[in-house]
Amino acid sequence: MQKPDLLLHIGHGKTGSTSIQRVLDANRPALEAAGIVLGEADGHANHQQIFSFLTDLPKDKLPAYQDAARELKKARRDGARLWHRLEEQVARVRPRLVVLSCENQFRAYPPEAFRRMNDRLRPLFGDIRVMAYLRAPASYFLSAAQQDLKKRPAFELPTASRFRDTLEPWMTLGPGQLVVRGFARDTLEGGDVVTDFVTRYLPGIAPDTLVRSPDDENETVSAEAMEVLQQYFRGDIRSPHRHYDRRPQRYKWLVRHADAAVPGQTKPKLRAGLREVIEARCSDLDWLDRTFGLRFPEIGPPTMPRDEAERRHAALRDVSDICTVDADRKQALLDEIARRARTETSPVARLRRAFGGN
Image (cartoon, rainbow, N blue to C red):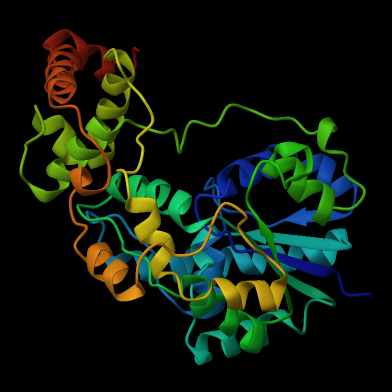
């Protein structure tokens, strides 16, 4: 039996990965009819459990309220089950291509993790390709910070050589050829990452025939909501009711919907001068150009010495360090959060939930 090819999509984060994953998941029958199998994920958007099994590494970027050891044990168990199910599906369907996607795998594995993964993949698949979309550093920074603050009290400060730190190990130790694409509307097929991914990596599938559904999982919130979430996870402010503390996702949902209801919601923007700081400290942009021919045309020559940029970048801690927070709107947001919480936790609302009502 001819081995199927394998495509590993590793992100990176904030480049439309969830949109890609959800479109693929919603179109499994059409993909299978075209000889393409998408690994199962137990209702999750990505294949993080399978990657945990393949590499024996914990999930990356866990929410602060989850137990890392317990999550790793569960991921290994679930990943092994999903992997064996994929092996069975490949033997039964005999596809020409298998796709696994997880943006959290845009990280440098230790050599042993690569060896373990390669030993699992190479006997089962023919041509193996690894692909990643890359987003310009300043644009990525703010989007990633917002995503971090939906789960934990601090946003991660990327290394100055984030691209090379990750891509070089995948090139030298990974299971197959590595390809990268710039994540920018004017360079993507149809100006859309899903269309681009399907057109370039899923031959035989017409993007306009695929079912798409709204995706609000990674919906942008305002700078005021970002600060509220950061202060909540830090313990500086409390949720308005213990109902939300039992599952912090509930508080995140409450903040997001209250934010949409308060007038003046706008997408957060980097503070003036911060984009130049982020770009000036990047030390691997020339390497990216030499290795992959990929440049970010919006980035010009550095406007400050790298050591100054590094010093200013290292001092970033609070939401107010990276974007402007409107104090009046933040207070209005807190008031709206409290109002909605009173309604949602009223005796009538609790009885309605207990009996399965809306």
